[in-house]
Length: 173
Length: 252
Picture 1 (cartoon, each protein chain N blue to C red):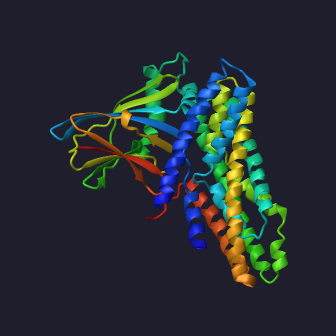
Picture 2: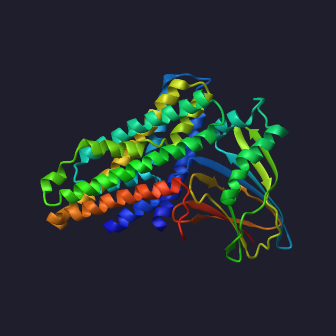
Picture 3: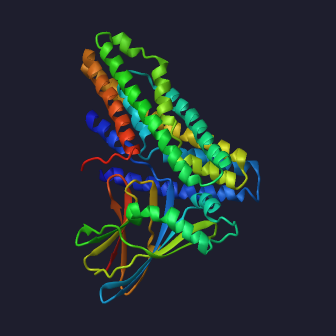
């Protein structure tokens, strides 16, 4: 029992508790049981946003212009590719590798940094599940029912126990 | 594990709300610089620290394992938590102010690099503490009294190892205060949050001491086996952390 406790501590020690919170707003269009467009908007927590704004809004005009947007995409947003953008698309039980993103746009809304982007692909909603979460648990993704907009299907969101981090699952019916 | 996942989810939910609450309250200070609002911020920072440290982190593991390898009383666990709080607050403030005022730009990139270096220093120290504890447990295996008297050097080394890596959560609050021109509040909030975290880490130590007392009386004069085991796990913890920060891929 003690050994289990010690090993448990040892294993858990390698993971971090969340330091950044991201509200996730998915907007998905579905036609004939296939996704036509998948759009995500991340809204970072206010404290992280304030720190990031000092770096990202270089001309300090309260908006992210085209030049700043390119800098954000290249130096800040693409880093998330290593984490699959905290988005795990599971088709027939298998997680797709590195989903591609398009139309990235960073903005500042109510003192909060927002990242908007499309994640393309026509997925059959009958055998596809979307899961969200940071496996390192440095970032906590937050998906609430009211954040989800789905056109052409019904969205079902549930929490997912991933042992050392807590994620969310989005299914379309 | 289901219970752990549920507990984790609840803790994350609380942190999510506290994170929002603290940022809104600090921002409201720009309009209202009242003492009561400042005290409220410190109270939230302390609570945030308490809850934040309940989540997984190497500090608790180190302290718990240290007290597994070391017969102690509960006062020592609180002393350890206090030392970690002080070291942690100082480290977080040096990191934050250093990066912000000396390096001035690209906070996040610099933070990541410096954080890696701090983590490597911490990992090496944990390894050395592990080696020292193994040596002490082994050499004192026939002298129960000797095992029970440990130098305060190892305690300081453990506190330093656990506290030297600044928590990004503390640094975020400090930096947020700096961005809003609330420098003093930022420093006090870092201290309040570090005390909260230190208290939670103390509880991990107390839990470990309680288990050790039970197991120790069961094992009687073979208690050194447990101590060597705990010390070995401290060593392994340091090794894992070092490999993780050096980005060494583990075989699946």
